[in-house]
Amino acid sequence: MTTRDIVFIALFAAFMAVLGVFPPLLIPGLGIPITAQSLGPMILGGVLGAKRGTLAMLLFLALVAVGLPLLSGGRGGLAPFVGPWSGFIYGWIAATFLIGLLTERFWRKINLVSAFLISVAGGIGVVYLIGVPWFSFVSGTGLAEAFMGSMIAFIPGDLVKAGIAAAAVTLVKTSYPLISPRLDNRAR
Image (tube, rainbow, N blue to C red):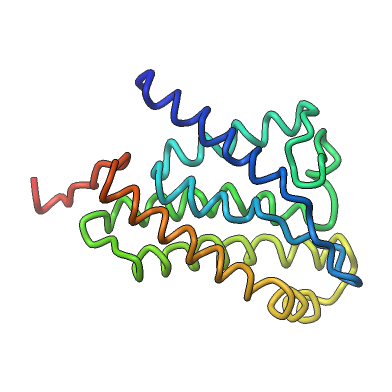
């Protein structure tokens, strides 16, 4: 790992913290806050790639775990990792990795549409795949009820975030690419 990689990891961990400055919107009856930080995995993975993006996310979450109030609403410490919505935080790690992996794999073909679809697959699909069952289990809510509540309340905003992330990824790709395209075994 180069000094440049370490700088980007720290910089994008700080970016996640900046997204936490925006106060959370709490949906009555659900208990899951709408935050700007759910945009983070889409941008971290899409701009930095799988390894550096995931390391940036892990650094950010480690800083939260040691008590820094970096989550939306000024939350920090270990409590955010055991609540009903904690699965969404764990989903950020997997989403960042998947988005980074897909972005690296399809780097040469990345455009606004493909970046959007990758952001939706990771930033919505993976995060919800981990977060909704966790929320259902911890809160005692039925899985179908938790999923429908998530769909109605959060997916429209998450689609907007995926669009913002796609625009950022394509802009960075054309102006200052940080990802090297993965080589196919056949291309070697």
